[in-house]
Image (cartoon, helix red, strand yellow):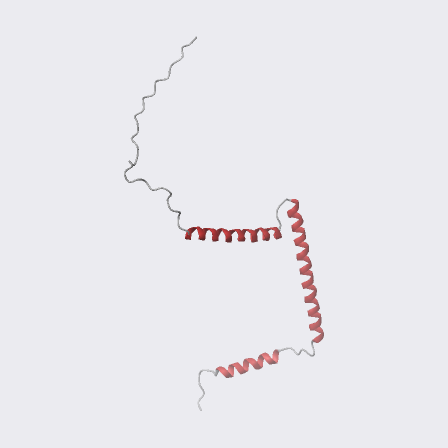
Amino acid sequence: MARSFLPDPLDLLRQAVNRLDGRAPNPEGRGIEIDTVMKALQQVSGLSLALRQALETAMEGAYKRVNLPGGREFAEMNDTLRRLEGKLDRLLAAQAEAKPPPRARKPAAGAPAAKAAKPRKAAAAPRRRSAP
């Protein structure tokens, strides 16, 4: 049978899996190294958590000294603001849906629209004071 110019995709996959399988480390012979790596990762994780907490408490103290709200207070204010915005949106939606109240008085059909304005007298010129 003649060989094709295009490689077989399944054959390429088998070769890749075999190469990866041959390069995989043997966990039985490297158990001690894995334990030390896990201990180191645990120590780094604990250290980063302790540093984060120390930084947070230091920042809270600095905020209090300068009389500024801290991160927790900002979160509380943000929650309060969102609740107020929600209430305001509900009130505005209810107001938009409500019809305006009917007019209390309707103008009479025969009443003139505006009364005729009386002409005003011209203002008298201000009097001048004479010098003493």
